[in-house]
Image (cartoon, rainbow, N blue to C red; front, side, top):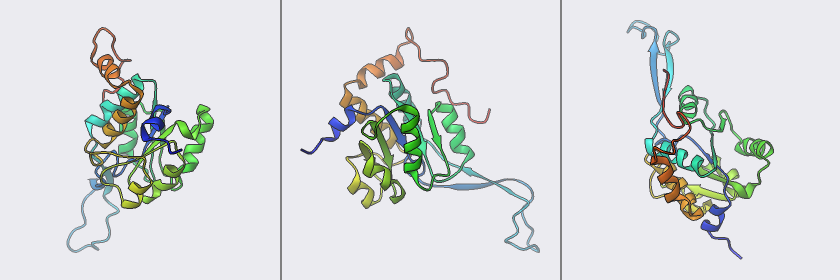
Length: 209
């Protein structure tokens, strides 16, 4: 018997995200932050004097969603192929339980998380957008594709978000899981209730400060 996406969502204890194209719109901005630019008389390929920083844009709605998931007792994390200080800072801001960068084969990170948490694949949700995400999506309990995902990824998904990566797709994924569990409204009310405050700084972004 085929299991519905809602039934799969009810089992989820851990939500994992790709980053580029999922928590961002996929744009990667390389910004020179120090050193002088080569002059016209210099080799245009010689940029060793400038340090490049990778910049990304994240959705505040997704950040709130991660807090809602945590209120409901779930843990969240990212698994990404790239290595980025920007991702590390955002993960610190959101106090993500799992942060794996430089992961060309993402199931390795998933297996490590399963060992650490004593969880099963059925309790893992994964949100992806490109073919590198397929091995995890084919194995995990709930595979979610964002609206801008490649067609092969959408075909492997149990649920496709309404919004695109970087524009609330992460929020869509978490709200779908919470709604399936019957915990969405309760989590929202706890989030906004000043008499029952969140743990200090749960989702207060501090960036590089």
